Amino acid sequence: AMNTASEQRSNRVVRMAVLGLGAAFTIALVAASVAYWSSEADAYVGTVNGVRLPLADYQRELTMLKHQYSSRFNYDFASPQGQQLLVFLQKQAIDQLVMRQILREAATKEHVTASQSEITARIKSMRDTYQNEQAWQQVLATNQLAAASLPEFIGEGIKSEKLRDIVTKEATIDADELRTHYERHHSEYQLTEEVAASHILVKDEKLAKDLIAKLKNGEDFTKLAKEFSQDNGSKEQGGDLGFFPRGRMVSEFEEAAFKANSGEILLAKTQFGFHVIKVTGKHAAKTRSFAEASSQIQTDLLRKRADELFRQWLEKQRTSAKIAIRPQYQTPEAPRPAKPSSATGTVEVLAPVSAHSPVATVSPSGKHQ
Image 1 (cartoon, helix red, strand yellow):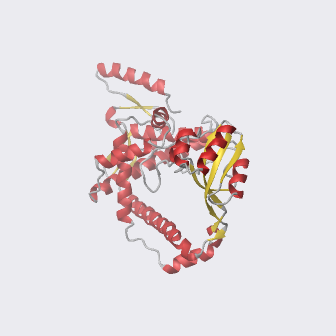
Image 2 (cartoon, helix red, strand yellow):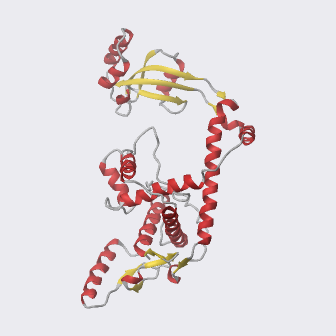
Image 3 (cartoon, rainbow, N blue to C red):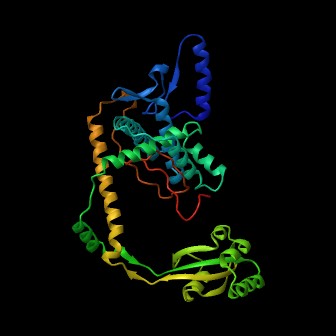
């Protein structure tokens, strides 16, 4: 089994002592879960076109994959199912390293770069999706990423995105394909009834009624929401909740909002307090016409076409590359094990963007908690 963090620290102490005696040894993780000793010069799992894939990168990738599965699906790696999964993850870790090296070489060949400003902006964008610094640092720790190595890691993702754009720039979708897709997937373009609303949440009914009086006298809803609302998730947006379908809000709020006319101001009481609600828009249930849906269809189909072209290109690069995985890291082909009956927990994953390892995404409506 893979060494624990404490065992790895102990091994590093032993290694330093042995180095002092003139024999350079280090512990290497073996893909078949058998510990074996190698010199520092041998600390790699294989090569791609003569470039070594560092053992440390393999260890990090495997640890991250194990954490994903143990956190999300409650896998016990000591169980028979867990051992089967471990073999699968070991191969996945090798495949990830191979593909990343192929992408690095292709980016160099195409003169694709990631500027410092692009990297800084991307990191800031990702950091801003988390509620606080502690949550962000936890994600970095989960992915075994030090702050110093993050820019290089993110830079790889940006270069992969640019490389994908170059490879797939000729991807097109014609009008017949759009029409055919719409006719075959007509039901996907049905829109449910939605309402748009803003609200001011307060705990006191008298204050809520006073706010309604102020609004009816012409005072600005946005200003009052920023001043009085106790809903920290919407107050800075002036209480704006955007459009939402049925089933999204608590029942009392939903019933009031859907019954009201656009522009109407009303009061609703829920478990959270008193809501001063302003309905700002309504969308009736309907099926989008081809003209209305065609832009979305084209975007979706073009993305799928580009994904397939990039996947084919990656496979071609891999086939033509000289890949040599050292015997002790080779694993038999293993199917992806079934997910356990009870899945628990979540984990955020950061990875360079490519066709096979997407960067963790965040809902546009809110931040990670």
